[in-house]
Amino acid sequence: MAKMAAMLRSEPTQARSREALERFITAGEQALSDNQFEQLSISELAALADSSVGTFYRLFTDKEVLFQLVHDRFVHQAKAMFDEALDEDRWVGLGVADILSELVSTLARLYGKQEGMLRASIIRYSSDVGLRKDIRGVNQHISNRLTPLLESRIQEIGHPKPSEAIAFGINVVMGTMNHYTLAGLKNMTMKALVTELKDVLMSYLRVLD
Image (tube, rainbow, N blue to C red; front, side, top):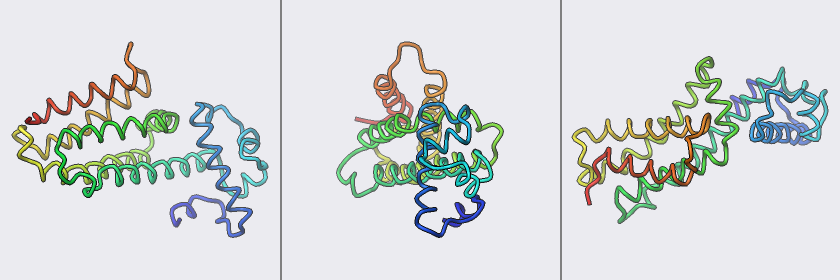
C-alpha cells in the first residue's frame, strides 16, 4: 500500500474513491489485455472504468502511473501464483520431472492470462529501469522457490553444476516465453511450446530416470 500511495496524486480515503481506483486499475488491465492501453485517451479509460476524467486526475497524474499500478498488481499476482505452485508441501514424494512440468505449466497460465500486460512490459523493458528491477524480482522469486525443491532432489539431476543450471534454465524458459508473447513462433501453439520447454529443461538439467 505504501508504494501505491507514493505513486498516486492523493491516497483515496473514502470508500467511493477506493472503489474508483480499483475500477481504473481493472480498466487498465482490460485495456492492456486488448492491446489498447497506449491508444486509449483518458476519457476512454474513464468510460471503461465507469468513472470520469476528473476522478482520473484526482487519483493519477497521467496514464503512466496507472500502468505502474497495473504492473505492480501483476507482479504481486505472479509471485502469489508461484508461491502456490512451488509450495514444498505439494511436492512431497514427487520428483524433479513433476516439478519442472508444473513450473512450465504455471508460466504458460501466467503468460496466457496476462499476455497484454507482459507484452507491454517487454516492450518497455529496455528503457525502464524500475520495470527491469520488478521483472528481475519476479524471476528471482521463482528461482528462490524452485531451487530448494530441485536441490533437495539433487540425485535426480545429472548436470555438473545444478544450482547454476537451474537459474539458467529459468532464464531460458522465460526468454522463450517472452519471444513467443511478442512475436510468436511459426506454427507453434502455446500447448506445443509448453511440451517443448519441458523437454528442454529435462534434457538440459539431465534429469535422471
